[in-house]
Image (cartoon, rainbow, N blue to C red; front, top):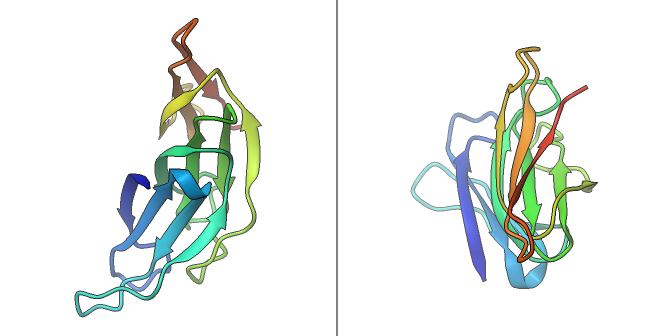
Length: 134
C-alpha cells in the first residue's frame, strides 16, 4: 500500500519522477518519467519495516537528490544515495524514536548542511528526532 509520494527529477533529465513509499512491501518505488505523460516500470528498493513517509533531497551534497524514508515499524530512517542515473544505493539506516511517522530535511543548525527531522508517534511518547549532518 502506497503511503507517501514525492515528485522530483532524480536522473537529471529535467522531467519530474515519482518516488513512493510502499508500506506493506517494505520498499520505496522509483518511477522515471518518459516525458510523454507516462513512466517507466517501477524500480523498488528495500528499506525498513513499514515505510510511511518519504522525502527526496540532496543529503550528501553531491547535487543529486537522495531518498530519505521514515520506517514506522522498525523505528529507523533509511537513506538511499542517488547514483546519478536514476538508480540508488542500498539503504543506510539510522535509529530514531518510536514509530517514526513523518520525515523532513532542513538545515536546522545553520552549518549549510541538510539535517533530517523525524516526527515519532509512539504510543508512550510523541517525540521529534533530529539527525544532524556531520
